[in-house]
Image (cartoon, rainbow, N blue to C red):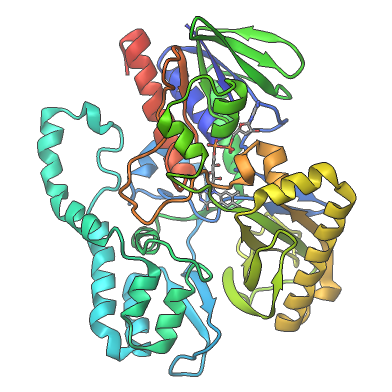
Length: 503
Ligand SMILES: Cc1cc2nc3c(=O)[nH]c(=O)nc-3n(C[C@H](O)[C@H](O)[C@H](O)COP(=O)(O)OP(=O)(O)OC[C@H]3O[C@@H](n4cnc5c(N)ncnc54)[C@H](O)[C@@H]3O)c2cc1C
């Protein structure tokens, strides 16, 4: 049976591998010249700028995702770096007991507990409770039974789920606790400000902090040395070794349907490719509303499109710099206030900056030099996409202004930057959209709502359409590589069960 897959991002490559392993003959059609989609890096001069991975859940055996990664790639061939601090947050208004404005979110949770209590002995109870919640998370495989979907649990597996009851109760009790609601309860003003600013002033479920910390403490959230494209290449190698075929420079324009059955794809260059099953691992909005012209929808899908269920995740303006000196004394990730807030041309007001210093990956810059990038998150990706389309000159000018501003701020704050900048590169939502087709330049699909227990909004199948399947980072709010491999695997199993009785 022949299966056509749209997109060679990690979703498409994972789906391809699992389908090949299940005995299908698959071919991937990818519009770019390389695998990886958003999971990519690019070279400018002697510098390699990374556009994606800061951490990979399941980078060691302590997390069940390791099992899935290991099914597709040789994890021993990847060197991971585990940072001592997840992020350093410089607050604006308060200081700790030593006069420092910088809060370190240590990944060693015993150290974090001691450190927070030393800052805020008056909050000892709350701090201990927070740390206890991380230790509770560490006691469970999350997600449970990673290789099976709940719908297919055996009787024994279902009974075994009883041991997850305390975790479920914990999650239910804490599903609406956010960094803001947690901060409100803290007495210490420095710690309170730090938690409010943990997402640079936005409010998100606290579990988004506590869960990764619980796994980071066990060294299970490492960064892969060599960067994202090198990591993505490993999936391509595996797919090809399983007999899969990738067609690059092959953008898909339309999914061909006859009698409500997907029959093939029409490429941008006019070629028609026929197959028994079509899998889209490309952008959700493009797939449903352009490739299929919005013919297979229901109320829920329209509500999703209209923003009534989830918002689209942020897009990003990434200013990357190649600096001709070492920056060993800077943390790998620092969020800090800027002297004067500035209003981006898209209307977003920034009063803080997020600085990534890749001083821990020697493969990205020549010896004695460093790659840095500064990220600005925006929900107004469409502004950049339209500007790029309709006023390219203005778009380029705005990018230059952004970069100049960033360099000035870094110079003022750290010194020794401006004269050492050898290379500048600015990626905007228009770049992410152009390169990967992601709707509004979203970097992780849907933004998770306040309730992390909310069910996934995107199904593998579309109503009324046969022989068509969908899986990507739009399948689970929050996206990210772990959700991508898990959904691709589950979808491939579903196809295998249906069409060849395997899975
Ligand atoms: C700045 C940034 C930081 C991130 N950090 C992390 C992190 O630290 N950890 C983590 O786990 N995740 C992270 N992510 C998220 C992660 O990269 C994504 O969730 C994941 O890579 C999405 O994979 P995907 O295959 O579902 O989608 P995509 O990567 O978007 O892949 C879709 C593919 O389909 C192709 N395509 C689209 N339309 C067509 C068409 N019409 N015809 C042919 N091909 C098409 C695209 O070119 C692309 O190759 C980050 C993302 C960004 C941008």
